Image (cartoon, rainbow, N blue to C red; front, side, top):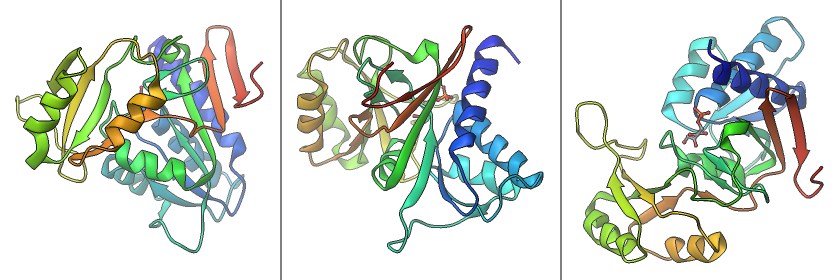
Length: 233
Ligand code: 5RP
């Protein structure tokens, strides 16, 4: 395991300290979130946790969690998720995020908005002063609307790229939509931009996650730090 993976693992493990027996847990997508899923499994296996049910944020995570034998359930109107643990691609100093590097932004946002507690786990390479300076905004687009949304985003400036997979064909989300990675540069007002993107028919979801987070766990060579959003220290 390289150093970055070790840091991701440390953050993922720490997040499971916030899971208690009997909880409904939202499972994020990506390598950091998978370290948390593995730790959840370890604690169930050794008896430290029991009666845990999980809602995965992607088919990738569903397969991973099912492979470990975790109890997978659907989102239900009867019960909110107690805690969701997910990764991020970029985290600003207000703990707003860019997410969607794994293409799971739509379901990830659904989980984030339906969780009592939303914990983001990451290594410190994900931190930035301003969103957009390190990572493009992933924009999930309905195929029919692709050309129109591409032109719309180009109108703001920056570079717009259709996400592809290894064989050169378009990446498809779990909903069978396309992803545009929009290299828009530093975002001056993420709230304004998120509002504009949300208004567009054809944009299914965008990767700006604003004010969705309750806790952030960041690991670095100096150790693991837990931030409660609103109580920065
Ligand atoms: C998936 C995501 C991931 O959380 C994000 O891409 C971070 O991934 P990793 O933990 O592998 O660095 O948003 O859609």
